[in-house]
Amino acid sequence: MRRETFLPLVGVAGLVALWYLAVWARVVDPVLLPPPEDAFAAMVKGMAGGRLGYDFWRTVERTAYAIAIAAVIAIPVGIALGSNERIYRSVEFVIDFFRSTPASAMFPLFLVIFGVGDMTKILVAAFGAALVILFNVAYGVMNARKTRLLAAKVMGATRFRVLTDVMLLESLPQTFVGLRNGVSLALVIVVVAEMFIGSTDGLGHRVFEAQQLFEMPDMYAAIFAAGALGYGLNLLFLVVEKRFVHWSGK
Image 1 (spheres, one colour):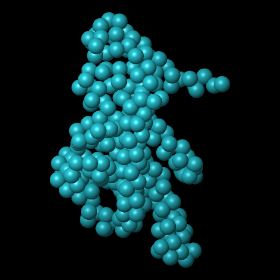
Image 2 (cartoon, one colour; image 1 turned 180 degrees about the horizontal axis):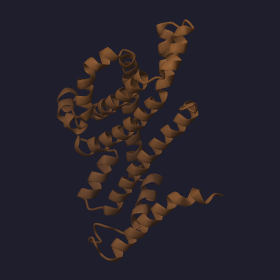
Image 3 (cartoon, one colour; image 1 turned 30 degrees about the vertical axis):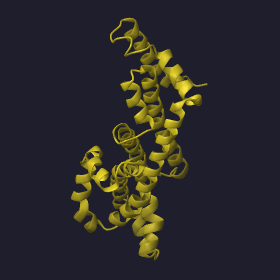
Image 4 (cartoon, one colour; image 1 turned 45 degrees about the vertical axis):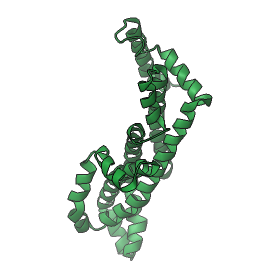
């Protein structure tokens, strides 16, 4: 087995070593910073049959709904805008403005419109993710290689065929960049929403509740679970991208 396979473990080992050193040196009150084995034990116990496992899947469910809604709306709109640069330029300021606005600032507006519940959490996350996806899809379409577009037109392809068979495929690498960024943003928004918008479950709620009750091993366990979920979702999209966009750059 190649030595490079184990390189990512070096950072993990270094982080655990620093954690043990901080506990040993009492850099932080031991009540607030338990040993790593306590946190990992709480994570294993919680995921195996405790409340953490249920909270984990509730966060997965909300994030999945949010990214699905965002993709269904943003990908077609991004393709339509990207295929007509004049239209895109006319709405570019609006897209960039809301894309630059912290999604958490939209919580009060969505609460007024949709009330307290899962719908608000999902739609705020979908809103933030959709803008990221839309921007990347439109950018990918606008930067489709001109030689392939010209070749398709010379061979008599209709505008619709050029859009679906050339522009859509050319934009896929950038679309997956948008999806990866979008799912990460959606997860962040969902977890924050679970902390503060009337939640009774989810990883955000679990982190906040454990912190309020000073159940520190459970708090760290929920944080690790959220980190593992984010890493796993990003890895999933990378695998799918390599499977379906293996021709990128060729």
